[in-house]
Length: 328
Image (cartoon, rainbow, N blue to C red):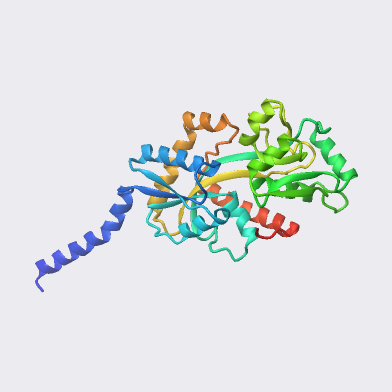
């Protein structure tokens, strides 16, 4: 082989090695799929579509939503975990499928800490503890004092393993006295719609509900809000105290979602997504849209969201194990 042939072969080899780097630098060169592990129309779907639309404008390629609902979000999340880590498949992660699910099923088909790169939180919102206006409780303290004095005489509505259910289980565990949890009787519902209808009709006295779903009913006087589950008061409920400030220090139970990539996705793509998401979540348009219904917009990057997901897994696994909750 001549010297010229050797040099040509070496140059060709170097050019081939450079191709993956160039592909990462030029990403995205085709549409990107965001798997949403829930049906269309819910909060998770709305959050994903909002983020996808903004990413399309920011990065110059379409970000397409693919809804893969089922099994509380675990079906679509498991599918995402097996996708090719090339940056063209992302997944909407959230409290149900990426924290609560680990407590319900120790043999889950994916590991949220191991199988994903968590890029950015998209939204965070509290649940609101609401009662029917005909109920005698005017404050959170009044309700808790009643339950402590009358164990088992008050009930609440819940949807299995939803954020409101988890918020109540945490309240029962940390709100008890002398080592005994609060004894409140849960009435299970198959969905939030029928449960809310029964609450509005005073068929059940109380429940936890996402702040955006409760807002119109609280403002209309059809429900009374006693407390929110965030550490700080919610701007749409400025007169409603937090549970933490109402006597249960450190109590927090949030509904949240975020954007994650598949483990093994090249770091330049992760970095580009992180920068884009920070810019998007800082934009006045997004902040106004989210905050108008009581969502908090966290503008933190991958390191913060990664730690947040881990902490949420630890919290809800402990709550679920203590309560003895099993998969539905």
